[in-house]
Image (cartoon, rainbow over all chains, first blue to last red):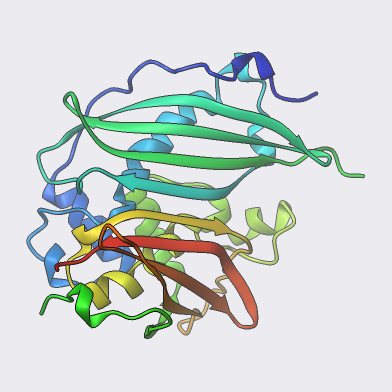
Length: 138
Length: 141
């Protein structure tokens, strides 16, 4: 059984606001092991920090029964970000997630989720996450 | 020091970064990112789903790869787009030494609008762990 193609074009409700703190930024920078002085004061977040909120928003979609996605067979295969501006301390981020594409790829299925990340009404970054849902073993 | 567009040429190779991935790094990244999938921390679980061992978060590999660019440019907010394909996992054994991934970058294109495209590489042993990895940066004129 595959994913529900009727969900292509579906937009999930805006996620709950996530307040960016300098502690969140510093923990992320430290986990990356990134010593760039631009991050030292915990004000500007690294480019991939946005995954913290987009992954959360997609998790809601992944577990939506209407999507019929087998979470246990899911692999994150591609990630893209287009930045309007960097994420900064004090941003209150919300995410709008769109099911952009679902299509078969051999015995697997691939799906692309477009995630617009806002701070208030301002678009900050757009992400595209492609996932592969592995089909039954041959 | 700020990198300027006049400092850049097509084919230019960025300094390579060899970065170590340890189990402690994966725990730190799981906590910082919220991705607590046990395949990144629990060896028995990882093996039960057919993996050779615990593997790094693909997003940790992506997050580290961009350092090739941001270390070079200086200002990380110069990055205006960044994309990768996570082709193979970085396997992380439970040793102090961990696993070393070699990150490379090369200037692929200088655009008319003054932005620069860098193609990135990430190799673990002899395995490419990222494919189609590229970042676009806006540099000072």
